[in-house]
Picture 1 (cartoon, rainbow, N blue to C red):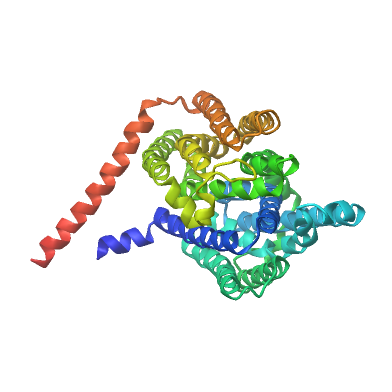
Picture 2 (picture 1 turned 120 degrees about the vertical axis):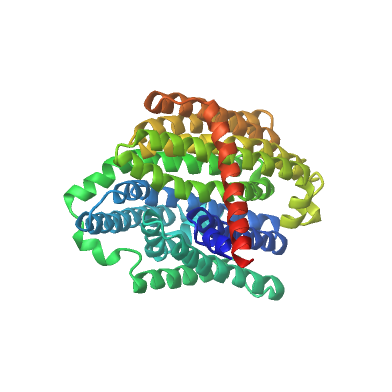
Length: 458
């Protein structure tokens, strides 16, 4: 019993549980929408979500990583000022983005209305304001390592929207426009909870000052680009496909294997969420050896875990496609000629490379080298865009778009390890030995605790 309680309260477990809940609800909602909407309408929904994710990387990328890093070693007074600056900068960024989008929608209304981006330009400016407080709360809670409260917020937001999708699936009473409106109300409700509980930091907005604004913006000018680049690595495929002659149908087909990659990224996001505050704190305190050891441990543990996940995804690709989107996507699409199952298998290989690539980026940010990480991501984005354009416009192949993901990730790993090695002097074999030690210690602790409990009961 004590072992179970210790595991449940552990940071990695709470973070993993939070991301698992969101992923399950997200994939479940995605599956219902894929079955309930026509291919073209489903493509518009994918573009709405993709566009929103991209903009939110910009909005929250300005301050998120900086806030997490600098809150690690801040006193109470500086803490309040930093949280206030985070809220102020987020509000200003949201206002600027909303005004630009509204201007574009009014100026180019005919063109946007007849494109797949109509939902995005019409509704996202309002959504941006409604989800701002609860997204601010998430980053403050992550910096404080309060993963139980993060789980609460994410469960409320994703759970309520999944319930709406589920009801709509069985009743068919809502159009895609009404689904967006429901999303707006749910985000407003989640933000209201964050404000009432005081988790979001809005009440400290007038405590912001030039010094803390500058601190976050100086760090954020690089991490913003990094996060935008990271999002582009995920969304550039969708954007380029949507602008190509392949159209919305190809967007919908490609979105299925992209959604399945989220299964692989559940543990990655969870472990990174706990690794970054720890590595940042160690770096701020000048504990280089601890930063190095944390990098070895997390990189190794995740690499072994992802080897198993990738093998599982590769072998059971057809089953996953059937669960997510139905049997109609198990065969080659007669209109486009694309096979979703084959693309999923390519992405399972791509998943093998994610842990070390992501951990090198986290390592560079944690030791206050966001500029180097931004350069790394820029090169990866460039490689991805070139690869996508060749795959789509020359070969007209979605499978080669997935292959391009493997290539740009290999580029990122090589660059990340090179730059991080210059700062930390890494011994690469330690990644794999530390990964083995992580699981050995985990098993050892669990078995020892169980043996001790058994001995006490005798």
